[in-house]
Image (cartoon, rainbow, N blue to C red; front, side, top):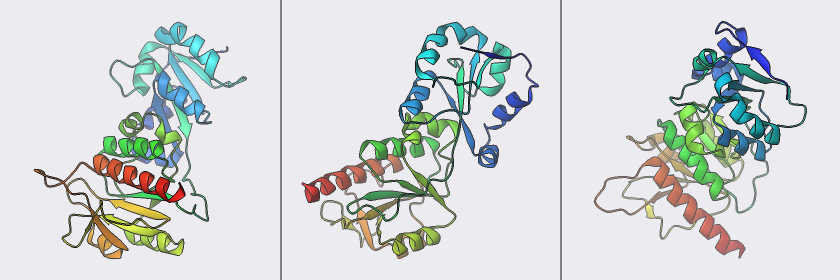
Length: 268
């Protein structure tokens, strides 16, 4: 295994990777940093190969066996940095001393959409932890993909960490506005269901999910926008007690469970 040494915090590559802590730079570079050995293994198992891997000098000996075992043969972008250099690129306290950089591109979800497939749309969900948790649940329940209208960056450190590797398995597609996404769904024959507290909403216990279908989950504090609710084909509510609403990630998980269950019933 060949290590490329980096000894200066002013190294151009270190400056570039450090800049990926900010969303504008991740967007400009179409790259994002991933910290930790476990999530690197998850990415590799999902068939994703990093652009580069950085390891602190103090962690290199401990991590070398793992890297030898999991990195593709001939992987050449492996950097060993001085510990004080690694501190410039990490955003975690108590870091394991390993950071990988992955490229991403907006994923075009497969067309035509699978008969019986189900999808999620997140509108202005601001908590990156919620975004990551939704991606994790979506991958676990076999969701076909997640559409994002505004909100937190799924490739930010907190979202990536919360996704537990699902960011490498779940197709994501971005839309500038809810109107644009609604039009896209209609063009492709996907039924839209808005999760809302409206008195006109049908209980999740009673609603029939057509196929394919996309369930919309809104902002943590404000819920879905008026345009998203007005443009949806159906409105649905999760009956709860003692609380006004659910966390966005919790609501998404409940809908995903119901979608998975009803899809299984139709196909069984």
